[in-house]
Amino acid sequence: MNEILGIAIAAVISWLNFVLIDTWMGLPEAPGVKGADVIGRSIKERGGDLAGGFFQGNIVCSPDASAGTLLAAIGCYAIGTPEGGLIAAVLVYFGNRLCADPGYAGTTGALTITVIIFLTSFIGFKTEYFIIGMVLAIVTIQGLYHPGASRLLGKIAQKMGRHTKLT
Amino acid sequence: MIIHANVFSYLIALAAAIILSLVLRLPLLPDKPMRHSWTISAVFPTAVLAVGFYAMVYELGYQGYVVALITGIITALFAKFILEKVVPVPESEESHE
Image (cartoon, rainbow over all chains, first blue to last red; front, top):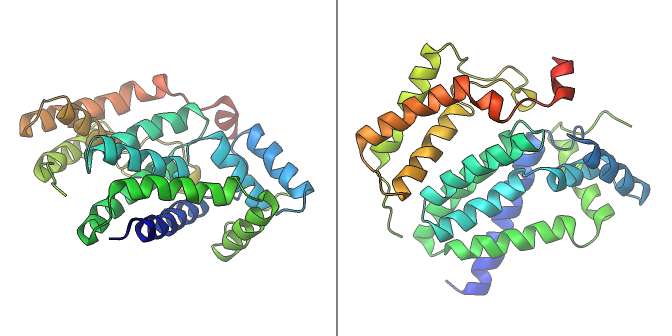
């Protein structure tokens, strides 16, 4: 498979994997810790969406599906599939609990991307595509334009019934 | 890609952890709504920890069904008696419960 095309598709898959799991697990609903609250409200003040801001704050403050996806991809690359992904899931779980988070989103993200890496390996995807793809995916959320990304995340949260009730 | 995992070993670790944690009276699933629950249950995190711990010992060179069984048993005991002490529920969450 063409490397650039593979990385682009892996980025899209990683993006969907972590955004859908994090939203489903309720990251836009409420800030898990005070830091996430501060980030969410700061993004709202700059013209963003509060639920999307909480989402962005939560993934900064604890290893959720974004970190799970990245660490599982790195684990699979460094150790092998599925051992690397399973070890990453355990490490992400402990990381979550240390960050005042029950750990569902992070471990689910790590396990699902391990399955995806395994399945896509049959059609020529290399594990390293997912490492680069996940870095690109997280840049679109955290690295380009916070208010715009938060509005998109807010719309996804609204559609999935996970928009925040806080004001 | 070469799959060098023994699927049956993972299943044994998984089954041993779930069955023993149920015997130790851990609930099968966390309380609802699950995404906000801090309850330690047989499926989450015990089952996830069991396969993860087996993957660790597998990579350290200890393999086989007996190792998987022992890993599952130790994981269930760990989840029941030690996990809450290692990574306690935050005080703000405890006050809500």
